[in-house]
Length: 259
Image (cartoon, rainbow, N blue to C red; front, side):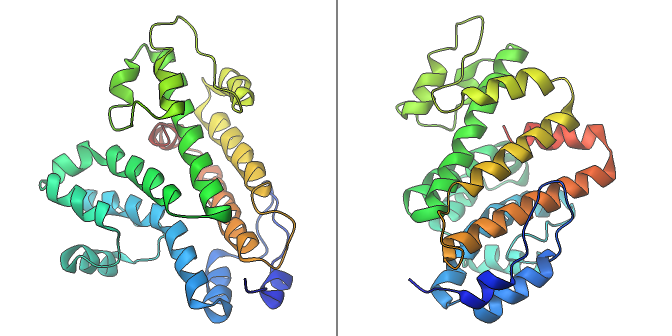
């Protein structure tokens, strides 16, 4: 495994409540100038989540997220020539040919992304994708119970035989919600901030930021540390953008989208 001494030494410390010394464009340039091709592909995988989110933005004619690997023209070309994405993306497009259907079933594509990419990755990337999938499922279950929604409907795109999904579905008829083992700390977070979308989003961002810290080990020159840095930098940029907007409706929409 390649050791990235220069890159590792060049990355300034990140703190969730402080503006980053290195912005994303500078970070991206540093990586493209120094990472091996295989490791750049790993970065592209992590950015794929934002590329998939940008598909929805493309269909809705909304602004693109700069954290994706493709700009608007590149994304449109990739979808037309069917390159640059795994088969499950194009399978989704084939099943849902109309734009309104793609938007209606978009959460199914996001679900497939986490499930498929986690199954075929390793190291930090696999730990991170599994964590992102799991906390979102727990959050979705908590929110559904709060709103009196049917958990079976909420998890319509998930495999009911999956251990975590099965644990959550087992509570579909209960009056309260208890998070699965390993996610107990989320209950206090949810209960404390649920009625304040801005505070909830901030608390979730801080929770994810610190969890990511535990996924890459101790080797500051490893590619896993660089991948973790990307994730943490993205979290900081997202939170700071929301902090500037001060739009409760906007934050509430983003929090719901995470479920």
